[in-house]
Image (cartoon, rainbow, N blue to C red):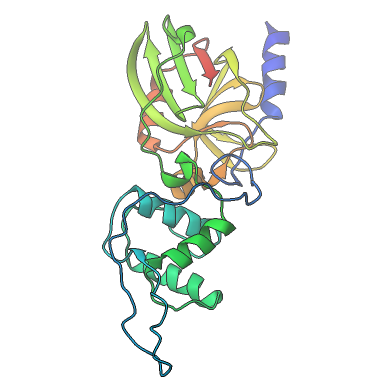
Length: 271
């Protein structure tokens, strides 16, 4: 028994996760060529009516696709792409608001385009060429995705059922979901391990011995990897990552979970 306790203590002594800046995929991908053009129907179609001195009409002004007040998933994509090139700091909201207008103006001015603040076809094509198609996590960086169906290995006993696909954790007892919460994982260089594990150590006020950062409500399941609350996740969403741990953003939910989970409970991490 003393030798087992010493082994656990040694594992915990070198454990620890902290937040690190990455993109919403857990890595920093290079800018790739944009996908197919937008399929939305333009809401505005201004054209030029002036006639120059030579008597020939000017070329039509570019069509305006979206402008202030518009809403929808297309606006989320626009905002996510503006975030990729650092013109929009805030997360996508789906509403073409004042910060979006300012971001579009800045992007247009930097590239010698008319600073209208409206997203026209010329501005959109330029932005698309400079960015990649946003993933779901870039469109919804603060969560909102439904939990994935539980893995078959989660259907018996007491299980922390962690889906990397939907980035959610289900707390399940005998096949019944007791609670769900949003989670994030390690980056491409410090990935969260997948498989079947069990909780072997709990620490309410844990501090990483490697990174010297707080890991409240830590429930260790594989070496130094644990499920724990992350204030960085709460603040930055999926624009950050752990060093391998399963971060939970809702402190109230993980506090309740910590009170229920016992050493020996199963942990399943799957895609």
